[in-house]
Length: 294
Image (cartoon, rainbow, N blue to C red; front, side, top):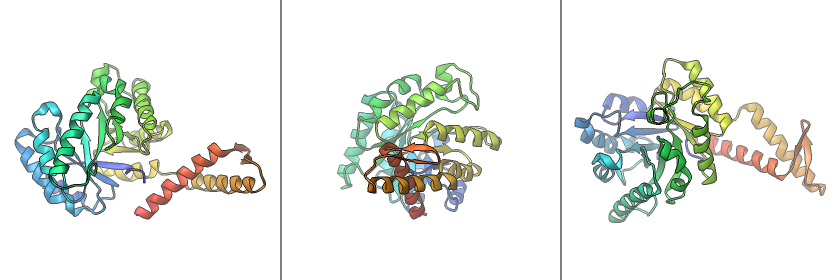
């Protein structure tokens, strides 16, 4: 099954936000231990993960831990690995295959010590630097527990700053990096490449434009920073009724063609062969999985 479409950030040190998140319709949540948590409250944030992750049904909780160079990563992992409800971790600012292997070894050691199935804790890599973009594919295939990449393309974020480029909703300035990260994720056979946050929570129209572009590029979900972004995110990353109808007719027509001894046909004037049928089947199966998941 594909990963979630909407990943809402929640500061894990803020009980009020954690309580509110329980009733929100996001597909998944990222309990943050990193940038949104002051240094003095890191321990409180870890306690927040342990207290609240079990309250979210269906392993919908992910945790963004602090980076390897922060001096906090070991304590973060020790506090959260094996907690009920935890699906995995988002690793910030990764840049090399060696870093991914270090993370994987640290997580694996804790799983082994606690009798947790090896590889149970999944990992999403955050691509937030020029070096990370260039190394994205090597990092994606470095460990089996890596299940996706997420593009850190927020306005004035680390990658935007590292590239030294401007930023716009239409995205030409960062399009190469955004597409390269997607390419790496798809080459690694990830079902759900994840886009990054849209930072201006007051610009609802801009969020929809950016998310529509994201889906056209090939992303299938993204990180969110405000509850108002959940509904448009889930709607825009899900195939429309018209798309589902078209793909259902594609499969029906292709199956009929095969029964006649032909490997191609047409639907709405478009040529359909095995590749197009496989694309249709992938979309319909993913949508069926989401419906089953509720």
